[in-house]
Length: 230
Image (cartoon, rainbow, N blue to C red; front, side):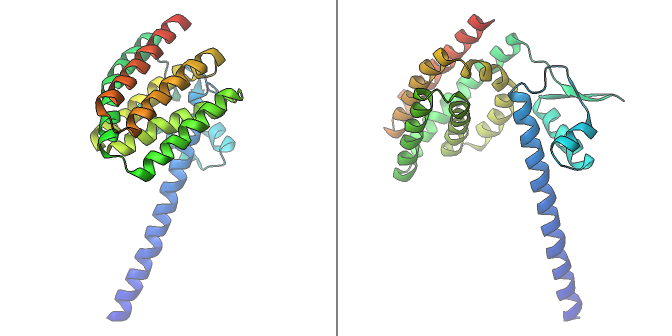
């Protein structure tokens, strides 16, 4: 009896390891396709051929299909009946509406982060602020864009607000493609890096009201810049 139980447990452990590996592969491919869409490597309304994606990202068709389903739930991809998938076209007006919603929720997260941040996390945010400033000074806009996205995620994590984080994760994916166009412009990066520094400084100072206001001002600036870009 004990041997059977032990074998069952061993088999279960193998199955769990395999399942974890499959989930990890799905997440990797989902992230890669999402990033490619955000960077504009796949244009709005472009068909996403599973066989092509499978070859590009060295993944099985099943993994690619799972990734496309996840991205469809995020609003980045459209599933077409009997025709596969394509990149969902998100208009400027829709992107601005999403940013307006994000403005309120991200302000909340920044305030919560300011209330809860530890000394170690505060030190890490200050280092991130310096890295962002250095990237802009050196003209490394792809690195600045990456750090910018990391800051968004980190503030959500520091807020400890699970519901807000879940909502923002989906909204961010839909509007970040438009923001990516802005972050690739040197003049805009020089403005936004100062705004991000203000957000970080307010959180590190543990000032919830100032942190929320800094996010609000930054998002208004992004919306205005997108309208100018249009």
